[in-house]
Length: 122
Image (cartoon, rainbow, N blue to C red; front, side, top):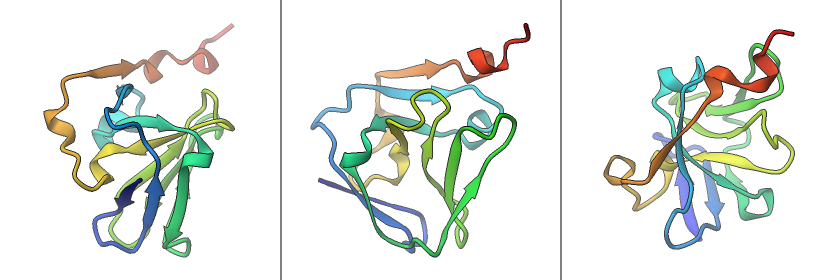
């Protein structure tokens, strides 16, 4: 179990993750590329918010399917409910995990949010 927290510490969660992060992604959608968000998926049963529900704010845009959660005090995005599999996974901000150095990870892939199927014109 790893601790996830925002910068100011008002929002905290417990996350059950494998020892080695298997899927690490950066997304190139209009929001994530601005945030510099490095993320990994986690099933809802492996994510438990333990502190800060009153500080969590929701941001949605465009299709309003994805849910982007951030701390209203320090502004740090802690997790997202993405458009793909939005009811089955969270994408957590690896930079918010205790004892993880996201910029030292070598296995970072790209999530192509810029060309998401929901954005394709018919």
